[in-house]
Image (tube, rainbow, N blue to C red; front, side, top):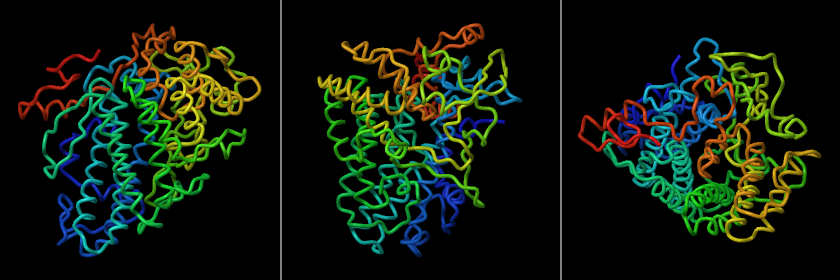
Length: 480
């Protein structure tokens, strides 16, 4: 078995619109005269229906990449072991061999993300060219597509860190575009989200294309332009907070402004309030996709013992509701006796973003803009409403940046368990070393990845055209 992104090349992915696969998973079809380069003479024989299906395909493909991200980032961030019973490389790849360009999970969040970016890029070309849509309809479509481009690129740079990312896309699907810095990538993503928000403001009251129930069934009406703009601002806040922690001087203040345009609400102790948000949904319907990181969707995903070892965690409601004791399993010298059950069944939805995360984002932005009392209040509300009567706590009232960061990482780690956040959080605050202390991991020669390196195919493509080798490629700078 191979991780599908390992055997994809960025160039091959970008050379194809790949709509057939995306749309099959979304449960719909589209006829393209030339799927590699849709034109008004081909795909636009019925542009309204064609572009509607293309947008559905972009959303569906984002959904299909969710489980891969959670599994890979969970391994890198010491949330989980993927104990695939016939191949230990799903552990040794991200835990030991992560600097190798052909290791398991290397290249995660690369080919498939850029493939979906290409899908959205091609859809926007058709939308711009057609006269079959009103200006408001075009704005709504582009607002959604640009938001999902930004989301895909966020996951690319989350995976790459200091390596950087490619952000430009042109009509030439075979172009080798430059890798830009982490700072530049975050700035580009924020600008793309702002463009999308401007489009959404001009989109009228409704979309002409369908939005699945993940945008409306969880306490948020993001299936309209106004509601989707709240979702856009929530993602913008996430991007700005992460960028702020990396040294962007104005980003934390901008994040607070963005949060003001979301559905953020005081935590009241109910699951509906805590989990209000936008979700990727799954289904057993023919041609649809299942949640493969759910408790019933895989028997191979196990909780990393670092989670178990958090002092007092057994009394925290987040730990007890999100993990389950099971008979221990051992693979490649490591053992775990718990499994995550954040997603109970193979049709359980995966959040893209929800209210509990918004409160945590606000707490971080408040602290680092000087509103320390408000930040502590928000952190305490997460701890007590989500963690229950005996939540874990390191510093109940942090007084220094170091104390606040320790408490923030603790609360984010449990509140956002198995949502693909822990590894990125520890890296952006310079605390990856804290994830590498488990004796059985140390004995196995495991080290904590600083980044998911570029796949071999990407390095080879750049070498063939004489492009400068990016960090992590064999002839480029080494990953720190």
